[in-house]
Image (tube, rainbow, N blue to C red; front, side, top):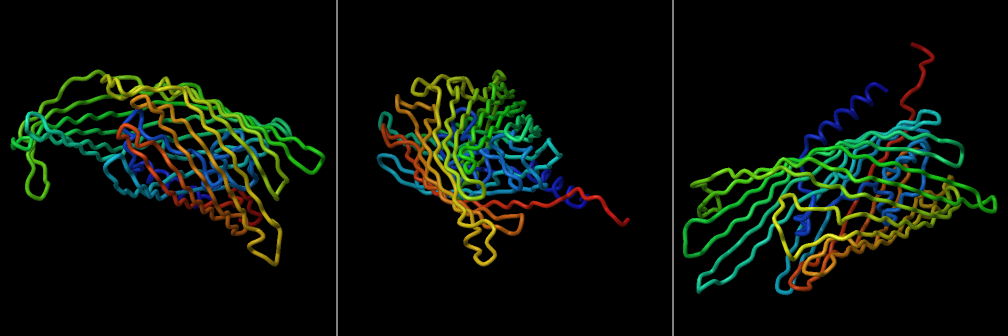
Length: 416
């Protein structure tokens, strides 16, 4: 048990110290960036459904699920994203790979606990534009990078066989940097503006799961998760400089000055998720979940006004489930595999040039059993955004892999 704890803590600190550019979306410029999916790969493969507790698998979407654990479970997952981007005139491709979560769940009788680290949001984009003013060509480039991670601890309690309650406490932290360069092709010097935000602050959420029988054979699942608004501290810096570029693209700074800008408070919006499902234990599940988020609370990191950008409250709708042909089959491995699928629609709450930015996704996945442990493989096809008014449409494919290792960590030795 001690060796396993040492391994987990070592992995945890490695992940905390690892900075990754987890997105290539131009929409990550806005707010706190592109908000990442919080759940495990098994939930992602069902469109993001998280309405059920499990004895050997973590459900990171609802903290009430931790009390359902019967084995200590170490879970880690990662996703590679392949994106085709296009607007009315141009097309491009991008690829990103990032860690999705590292967490451990610990059963404690009627209680259950979980702790770990996962990304909250990511910023990563590279954009260029060119205009002609009075016969002179002016080129602009915009880049952004950074991420906000969260370390969390959660605790759950089973009130009875039907009802469980839980909560998560998170500490959010990270750096985000945005840079713009303007170059008049008739002038050697270029102007550069670099904005940096250091984000920190806490947040929490509470959850409940309720399961009851129907006709003695079927289970009805209901899920509730509420996250109140969290206010994060943003320590802001701005640097202005004139730069030149060498033939190989290296940047040389000629003059620069730091500009005082006010620090700010940034919002993680209030969120409410409600779920309902029907299933047969160890056989199948079909469920739906709807999430309401007060995205109108979002503001940009630097309070520069942009008349073309607004935020409105958002909604997400999920429909998904799984099927297991025969979970205890001794003769057919494929009969023990968990087959998952789901669809989702999300109105992100971001409005640009009076056009809402929506996100659609279709998911498939397999849960490959390895005794009490398993490997989860997921595939997602999605579309975000639009080419309206020369905005960007993203056609993306996600390949996700998760590993869940379950065992009894805390055993009393019979012989010392």
